[in-house]
Length: 288
Image 1 (cartoon, helix red, strand yellow):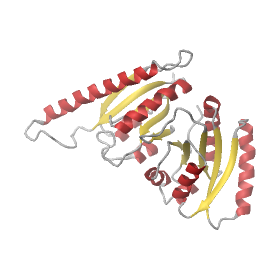
Image 2 (tube, one colour):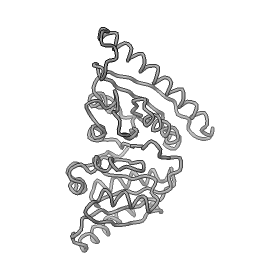
Image 3 (cartoon, rainbow, N blue to C red):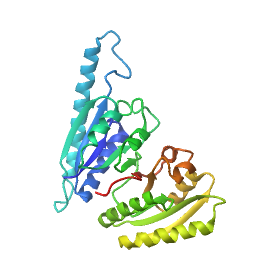
Image 4 (cartoon, rainbow, N blue to C red):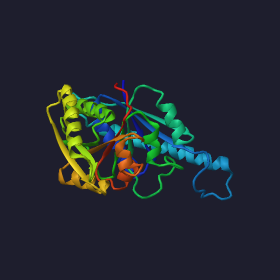
């Protein structure tokens, strides 16, 4: 059965994201894999005179207790899922080493459908993202990554906005979203993002070709919008707020037009201003 991979560092943000995985797992008919990774050298030692081995054992024991406690809390939430719905099973896994290395090993498994993690709150993401940040996860995976702010609610997704440039990667992402839409029943807004001064005639032609191909997916609840400007990250956030979007979707491709528009790292820049949950879909994601 498919699995949702939940990356956790046991912070409040991560716990909130893990709780959101429960409702999503019921819709996606997927089970949950809680995963924590830690480096061999502790970030801060509170035991200056204690041998390293003792410090490591203390952290490993604490990590085991925390992930067990998190699992027990999630299982209580799963019990509230209606019996006609899928009640996920939960597995836990803790590994020593860098997140980048461990994630690579995990993704060799073909059963992982989605990755979920909490957004950064301005404090250090201890033990999960040491020496790294959210972009490590995004750049490492060919699976969608759902990043959830601490106070965001994903219980009822009514409107999803995808920012795109009408290229092939965007088309695959829209196809993926239409399949999710049939499960969640949301309205899908396709938002074309462009800089001021671009050829409007060319953009209209691209949109017409794109919409013709999207029609083949036979998803009934789609609309098209356009935004342009200089500070597109702010424009995008403002658009989502004004239009009541519950989820923002970005297609990640290092060589895409959108990536150039957002100064080489549109996902990282957008995450700094993130107000609603964000789903990052790899442009080269294979159909599953």
